[in-house]
Length: 112
Length: 117
Image 1: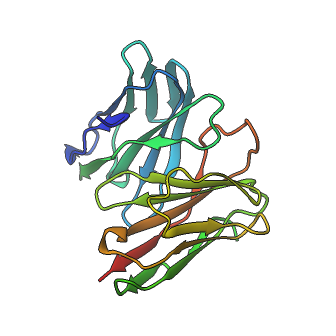
Image 2 (image 1 turned 120 degrees about the vertical axis):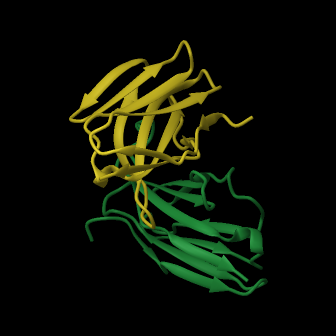
């Protein structure tokens, strides 16, 4: 079993819809939770970063962390065709200098 | 440059050939990471440098893989005697923060796509 599980999709929704992306994890030591966005043939770029549990909002994006359920989510409101990309969740334990563990990514397509 | 630069962007190698992939991190970034991304998968950790010191190489899949960062800036990932299973995108990332301060905010390059025939 992988430390981080993520539904690979693909997920296709109409423009303007609310998108929900999720990951589950097994390592209770994870304290830092991130969402990266990766366009085709590009490197991942950091979208959202959260420490421990709770919610964080940035424009149309909201990240949620539920450590009791070992479950994290990314919500995209008013989705746009430019949001079409692969979304990778990533996690790291405190004090770890290097062990950033990525999910396998969810491919998202927003239909105009 | 403004971002992480990787070269070559594309490399085709015959099985058994040696390859070298280069990474120019963002100037001043202390930490440098190499990841391997297979098709349809997320990045898998290979190795980590803090300045010139290689602090973690636990993700290197075999002793055919070797990475260095001799002056704490540019890094090279070398793969000897390439095999077909080495075909993947090799991503380099850098981070500004140093010891104990890494929060996962990595800046990635566009990757080097290696195809082994």
